[in-house]
Length: 170
Image (cartoon, rainbow, N blue to C red; front, top):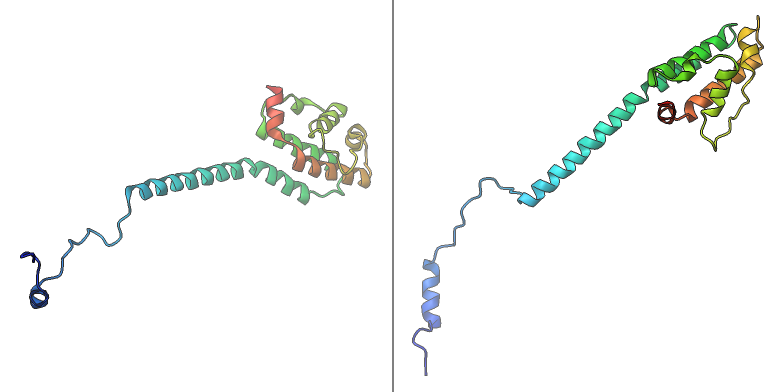
């Protein structure tokens, strides 16, 4: 029994040229992102902004330390007042980062003890710290002692954690 609804091959061949292609409506733009991708891009953009903000903050917090290291490198170690200048640089940094720290009033052996004790526990200085009482109050301190103090000061600046110092005095 033949189906009367079935198209015969002759009729389909005759009607194909008369058919029009299916036309789809054009999108508003050619490149449409799904809402999920927009959410992912907003999250990634937020993370980039947050990381950039944290890096910029870190850069600003390290600025006084970089300035102190640069001033220490520019210091004339042959002058008689070089030990006082080194101590002034270190105390200026301490005052900038932790304004009310008790070590700002220290001098002589108390300042020397503070410098040694403020280093992290597992870090040992590369150069010994000369006696600051004799270094500060001698008429003409030895150039070797001044160089050792400058080396220790640079080491201290690189290794000390000023945030930990600030939390310990509060």
